[in-house]
Amino acid sequence: MRRAIGLWTLAFLMLVGLPMVVGASGPKAENASPQASETVEMFQAMREGRIEVKFIAKDAKEASVLIKNKTDKPLTVKLPDAFAATPVLAQLDGGLGRNSSSSTTTNQAIGGGWGSGMMGGMGGMGGMGMGGGMWNVPPEKIAQVKVPVVCLEHGKPDPRPAVPYQIKPLDEFTKTPGLREVLHALGNGAVSQRVAQVAAWHLQNGMSFQELASKQIRFANGSRCPYFSPAEIQAAMQLVTKAKQMAEKHQQQTPSPSPGDSLSRN
Image (tube, rainbow, N blue to C red):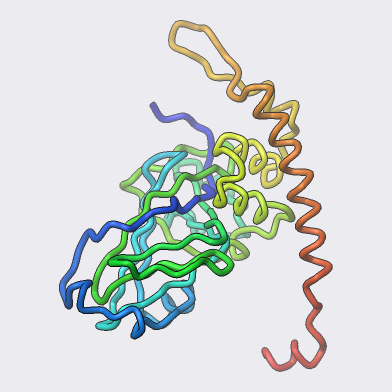
């Protein structure tokens, strides 16, 4: 049943394990030498047309990420620590994840993160994670990985597999302090999906913990029950506190660009 819970931004966790080959049209995986594999950053490789990344939302809690190597050589894809995916129809609304009221018929936007230290590959071609981790994809193959997700936009319809999504850097969707840290905690398996969901709605949508604690599920027979347990609310409160502290620490450690740096980018 479709719950009107929101054009969601779903935070995805890459499950640790080996990807599954779901398609191929070129050399077999065993022909690819690990030594010959080139490391590429995911979004950069997408811009260069070397890989194609497709995000398929199953529902509000689970999705699949497909990484297609479009080259004739093995690639080690460096994954971002967090990312977003937005429904293609919602792109007209724009605005760092703040969609207008005219998009009430669109499905949730989604975002997520992978855990540090994650490794993945085929035929033993695995590499220890750096930042968001690494994933190996043989030439002209497609690797598929299931990811849990959390909503970052409360109040829109649940995602559906039929709705196309565009994956993008998290900062292109939102710069909410502490959110990246929450997604990364989910990706590392440090928190449950439901705890991360409470934290995400609090940070991104400004919902108070009291509002979230009073949120209910309504059944057809008229009965109701809390959407989140008191333990989940309490855990989310602790998570948000730590996430904000970490975000502030990261901000202090990140040097501000000098005037020369700004000019060099123009």
